[in-house]
Image 1 (cartoon, rainbow, N blue to C red):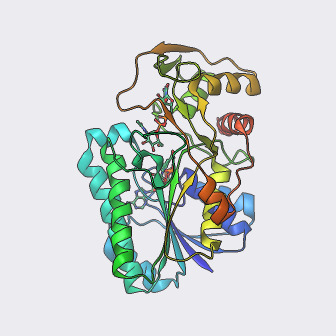
Image 2 (spheres, helix red, strand yellow; image 1 turned 135 degrees about the vertical axis):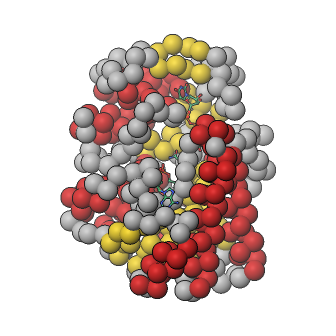
Length: 330
Ligand code: NAD
Ligand code: UD1
């Protein structure tokens, strides 16, 4: 089976490509490298001993994408490609709407034209806005607070409408919680340029002394220790969820949360990171960050029951692997 992976050089995409190759799928990657590097392809080969075909195309370029679909006989698509920085999306909303929506519409048009009807889409827990209770179930009300999140919700709506118009489509929407960790080889992981927005990349940069101190945004939430609570999931558990989604016998439009179902506070994560890696992470408590919610964690019951999704890595693994990746690549 030939799988087109959009954004396959990125953080989650690259881990998923490794799983797909290990499971015997043929993989084609399309990525414009706006937020990734070409050497990921060599690293994937080093880990799996298998090669992938790569197209350095922007999905917003319909002509190029059409030529790819003409050239390759694609059986299914996993669609990771997109811009994902919340604060940047607030500053540059048009860039986010243009990139994330045009690319998806082009992709879906090509899929229609070449009769490729199976797609797995990367959505986010951000579509739940501020949840009414915890854990979060898939049928909770949806709302967003920033342009990035709105693109995710708009794409979910586009996919839903497409399915209503043509129910031969087989669509899986995966709502990720907070992926961290890295491949155990130390070859693949997340190492954003500049100052990271997300917690784990920031912790790692403080531990390696690239940044002086972590600011913890608020210690007055109604949580175990006052700091925010999130559902951190190892990227390798998350990536394997995509293989399960491809293998799922259930047809139609399906939506699954991919999280562990466990809430961990920011401070708990910092402490675990220090303990597992035997390093100090300097931190200070500052005011809350705009748009943050107190707690967010999934019910992954539906993914467990219908996909057989069962995370196998714990918080220690996530902390160890995140640090190992960055140390190995310095
Ligand atoms: P990433 O930035 O590492 O990977 C995305 C990849 O898409 C990059 O390699 C980038 O170069 C590529 N890309 C972006 N726009 C493109 C375009 N127009 N044409 C071709 N390639 C393009 O991000 P990630 O963390 O691997 O996330 C993958 C997907 O999962 C994204 O859609 C993201 O919004 C979603 N998601 C991520 C998280 C997270 O915490 N990482 C959480 C929820 C959802
Ligand atoms: C963020 C995005 C979300 C997106 C997800 C993955 C916001 C409001 N939400 O989720 O839409 O899907 O990333 O890309 O940006 N924290 C600190 N100090 C830091 C960084 C973070 O204390 O320097 C805290 C935050 O306040 C939060 C927790 O750590 O409580 C997790 O933050 P982060 O990693 O940015 O993820 P989310 O905010 O959950």
